[in-house]
Image (tube, rainbow, N blue to C red; front, top):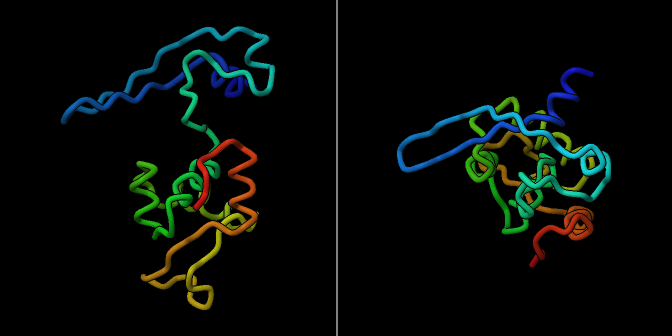
Length: 131
């Protein structure tokens, strides 16, 4: 309950400028009706950036096949367990992405690609056009 309220009323800003990386916590009040209404975007959220991890992963894979390391780099995620738990495993479970080497899921050459269901899900969410 407390975390939900904090998420609704606060935003973490990540600023990258040159060689410096600064993280700041800034509290912003959000209009109650905008926070409760689906599809209404906060004034502080970019229209092109999704907060849903799986949607972000699908957007990256719309460009083509990628390895886990390439995906983490594109998503700017360094912590491998978080990437696997929050991004990769849910996308695989919903069958929106698939292995390029299904017989060898732990291969060092393993890459991931969108499935037709993943392409459809990305299109429905207003993501990038897929090939």
